[in-house]
Length: 145
Image 1 (tube, helix red, strand yellow):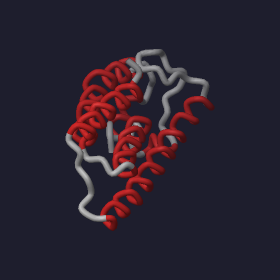
Image 2 (cartoon, helix red, strand yellow):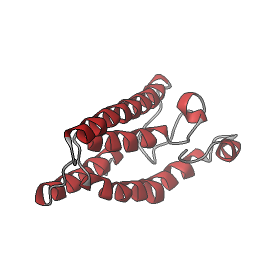
Image 3 (cartoon, rainbow, N blue to C red):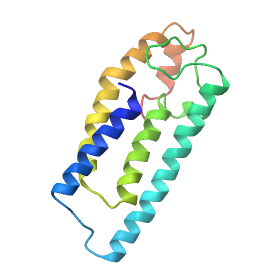
Image 4 (cartoon, rainbow, N blue to C red):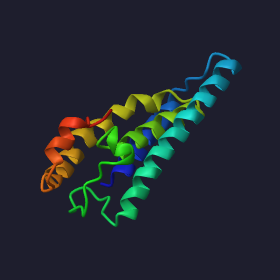
């Protein structure tokens, strides 16, 4: 299953629970602050994911886990994390919960992160080992942050 859909489905599970067991902000001020913070986090996540995706397209390499990459990305956001697209998706997810002032979807976020960390990233890392310098890159840059 494509990784973005994993995030969408886990989010929708939380929305379903939000509909069944509504949780609301304690005040209009709290709601406004949460919405603003959510918007900022959402924007950061969108920028991170989009810039990472743009780098892949510019390099004409694949974004599909398990497919052979043409190049090893180590610049831009890849200097800070080996998985900026996934970090971006996580920030988008968190930001969306803030924008909509929903709590329940946050309880399902760990399911998406566990899936990506334990099932998707190992497949990607196995295919990236063919690049010279990948081991040094992994020693220098953390998987997440």
